[in-house]
Each structure stands twice: as structure tokens, then as C-alpha cells.
Length: 173
Length: 173
Image 1 (cartoon, one colour):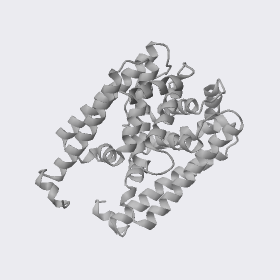
Image 2 (tube, rainbow over the protein chains, first blue to last red; image 1 turned 90 degrees about the vertical axis):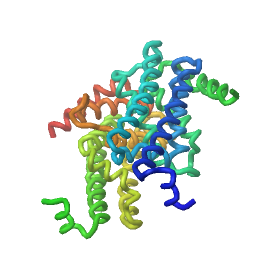
Image 3 (cartoon, each protein chain N blue to C red; image 1 turned 120 degrees about the vertical axis):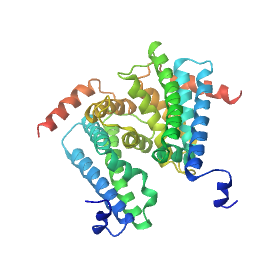
């Protein structure tokens, strides 16, 4: 298919951008919601969400880059629809952090900022990640999940061991 | 001055983009190098670098956005020049982390990834920061500096108190 032929399927460049961006945001949101819904301790749940979020941005870095950095090219209505999806993804991460604060596992002076910063780390991966370099998306995600727990002053020592088991269990699902 | 009149000063859009991007990268690099060179403990130095980096990306968010997200529009030579500046900025942050590992203040399994992730947090601020909302660039930077120290498993309790004093001292310079 030629590059031009794609406009057989989309009315305009703006429509194409919206559909690509929407597909990326929906895929990430659904994956995050599914991970959130799994039975887990607050620490495991947060860790699994960060793993998912970082892996997604590394594996789908081109899609994610378009979705994250071309938002100003969307028209008002499309932009609002995308922001709504982003807000829902943010809600998932915020609720996971909040549950960990409630359980006494996490401590952070500013829930909203903690949420933004964890999402920030994952989103920025799509800007700099180059496949085939030193770390795979999986290895990168593991390290970032550890970092995320440290950012949240996670009290559970052995959080990594616990969570590694949980991720192993998911892989066997 | 009209938008078009700017081309009296620059040969082309590409040249304008390069000069804007270069100015942003040079300003940040010089500021980081100056902060690095100040007498400080490893913890204070790292904290001051993160403060500087985050504040820069919040205050200069439009410039930083252009500099960070339009790099693919630069031609080969311009791109290489900008990457060299970015590498130097990265070197400053990496060396500050390394000094803290050497002194026993920080612990991180992967120096390069720790460096990338701290820079990532700051860079992504330019994507989402909206002036006049809840946090000022200064307040945001303070919280991010605390988070950065936690990411590096900083051992010095009271790191914030120490570093706040150091920042206060700078403000009086």
C-alpha cells in the first residue's frame, strides 16, 4: 500500500492522527484497567501497572510518540476525547497509589504529583527508547518498577521478590 | 514584528529551529555545569541539579518543548551538534550520581538508567506543565528533587533539610 492510499480509509490527516492516537490511548487504558482489576497486594498492583505502562511505551514507542506529542495538532473535539482517555489512565494509576497509601505501604506528600511523575517516566520512554540497544522493554520496565516503588517510599522490603512472583504468575495465565 | 519578519534574521525554518534549540540546550548545560561546580556534598549537589533541571523545564516549557520534541526536524549536522550538547548535560547528571554512589549516599543498580530517568522526569515537565496551575516551577522542583533522592535510595535522612539550606544559600548569592 502506498502512503497516499491510506487516505482511502481516512478522511484527512487530522482524522488519521485522531484514530491512531485514539487506538494507542484505548489500548493502554484497557491494559492498565485489566492489570488493576487483578487480585494483588497494593505493592504488587502498583508494580504491575508501572511494568505495563513502561513496557507499552517502549514496545509501541512510535505509536506512543505520535499519541503523546502530536496532541496540539488535534481539533478541539478530538483533543477532548483523547484527554478523557488520558484522564482515565491517570485515574487508574492514582487509585493504585492511593490504595498503597491507605494500606500503609506507600508514603508520598502529594498524590497527584506522584501520579504525574510515574506516568511521566513511562511516557518519556517513548521519546528516547531505541529498540535493540542495551535494555529490552521488559528489563527497562523491571528497573523502572523498582524505581517507582522507591519514589513512593515503599515500606515493604522484598517488594521486588513479591512482585516478580506476581508477574511470573501472570505470564502463566 | 510579524511572524514572517523573523526570516530576515534566519535563513530558513530549519535554521531558526536549530538556533532556538541550540540556545535552549546551551542555557541548560551552562546552568547545570555552574550548579555542579559549586561546593556541596554529593546529596546537595544532586538535589541542586534536579532543582535546576526541573525549574528550567517548567519555566521555559515552550522553548524546552521545541528543543526536545522537534529534534527529528533538524538536519544531520544540526542534530549531531544538539546531541553533543545533550550528552554533556547527561554527563553532568551522571557524574553527580556517581559521586553520590562513591560517597555511599546513593545506591542504584544502573547508573546510566538512573541518569536517564532523572533527566526524563525533568524533560517531561515541559510536555505537561501549565503555568499558573497548582504548583509553581519552584514548588514542583522541590518535590521532584525529593523524589529523585528517593529514586537513588539516598541514605542521608534529613537530606531535604540539608539541601534546602543549600538552596537558600544559593538564592542569596
